[in-house]
Amino acid sequence: MALKALALAGINPEDTTKASRYLRANSFYDQKPNFDYSLGQAENVVIKDYQNAQYYGTVKIGTPGKEFRVIFDTGSSNLWVPVVGCSHCGIPIIAPKAKYDQSKSSTYENDGAAFDITYGSGSVSGEFVVDTVDVAGIMVEDQRLGAIKDAGGLGMGYTLGKFDGILGLGFTSISIDGATTVLENAVKADLLDEPVFAFYLGDNADGELTIGGTDESKYEGELRMVDLTAATYWQIALDGISLSDGQSVAKDTSAIVDSGTSLITGPTAEIEKLAQQVGATKNFMGEYTIDCGAVATMPDIVFTIDGHDYTIEGKDAVIQSGGMCLFSFMGLDIPGESAPKWILGDVFMRRFYCAFNLEKKQVGFAKAV
Image 1 (cartoon, rainbow, N blue to C red):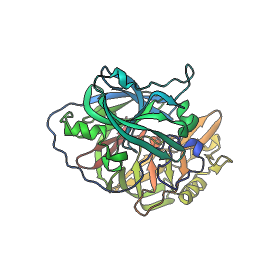
Image 2 (cartoon, rainbow, N blue to C red):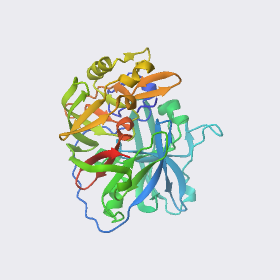
Image 3 (cartoon, helix red, strand yellow):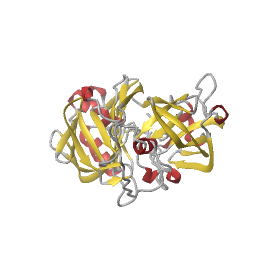
Image 4 (cartoon, rainbow, N blue to C red):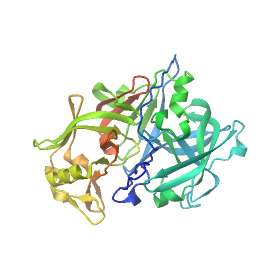
């Protein structure tokens, strides 16, 4: 399974070959941008689902617009795509990638600043360019983005991946070179009805990203909003994690809600404790597996956020593939006192509709339908 690895110096996941999708900027710090907005629009992007491991949609870049498949990633803040001539960017016929060609865009502007990010599994490099970005008909002009010339550091996870690039949905505060994010530019240009976007992830089926509002048909009950503890990643306080049989896993901790991480990660010691509690064992690759015959009797896992419980049923915490049952939690120790300890990735987001408010700096949850 693909799991992104923090682009923070010194973070080494147990298996970096599974880390190519965990793209991060280089620091945790708070920035509080102020937005003024008026009536704009709300649009939907179809989010394709590849084996519950890669979720991606399309954007268009340039004039005329060229289509790219991107991971809409709440855990990073930059937009990048490969450029014509890029090294290690797909394999012709077998795994081709769409490539950006500045010579074919009438709205291209030269920037020239270096675009370099180091990831847990390697690095990508190129340079910034400026062009128009079309997200579901929302036209964001003069957007700085990375034109990648070498993606070799991401390895086969990117080469064979279904996506061409990344569109970060985090805050500008963690953007490489301080480049304003696509959505913050859209808000500033009054292109959205509300400074809000929301995810409905499919379960081996298409999902939806709503930009400029929420889609009430995709969830039931109340959409409960929670204040962020840092406007960098979508970071929140986590009251605790427990099992439905009463066992405690963690208390008074923190988490980020991350559409770009396949699994749920937490401190290694707490993941080991949780695995033991549910009957999962670590294999030689560092993954936790569980007897497929025991899945039906696994306890549920309960995340308590702002006083409300969000429950993932035991069966939904297991990924079954090729006769093996993989426990969808993985140990990852993130250094830094203010750094988040847990990452609520796609496993969590498949069960709960997640809304993100850029102006109020809040994230909200409701049970997905």
